[in-house]
Image (cartoon, rainbow, N blue to C red; front, side):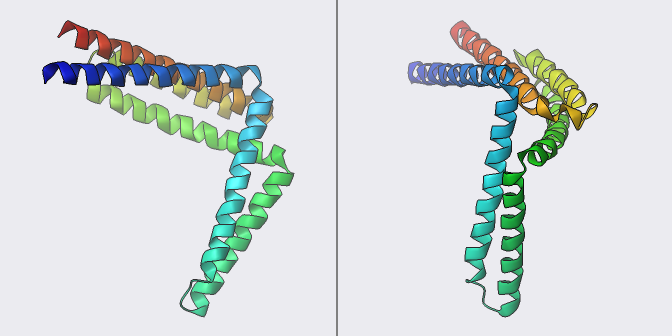
Length: 183
């Protein structure tokens, strides 16, 4: 039974390492083509908003009373119109997403610091703190020159974040595998 468990954990750490490498490759792509990555992300989010609006419109007809119908209809129209506007003005969508990315990275960095303190006794936990510090620095790099940073920031910063997060998970996977091998 112990041999099966060890093999299962080795498979999990191997899969974790593979996903980490995929994150690193995606990060490198985003760094090398930052504007395309940023516009692509902005357009994807815009389409998600539009389709969310269509969902609200479809659910409007399932309302049991006129108030629920009107409320869902209005929300659906707002989503479709807002998402459509962003689709036709990707620069505005990109600037908005750039600011949102700064906030997300700030929150991610704070949560990773909390995670570090929770797991600081574990092997490889220093990488979590390293990732937190880099993520907080990225949040500052985006926020400080905003909105002029929108043309390059979201693709570049997201790429760097993916690279460092991938490296963190790779190092944690290696540390976990070494711990398993020592057993």
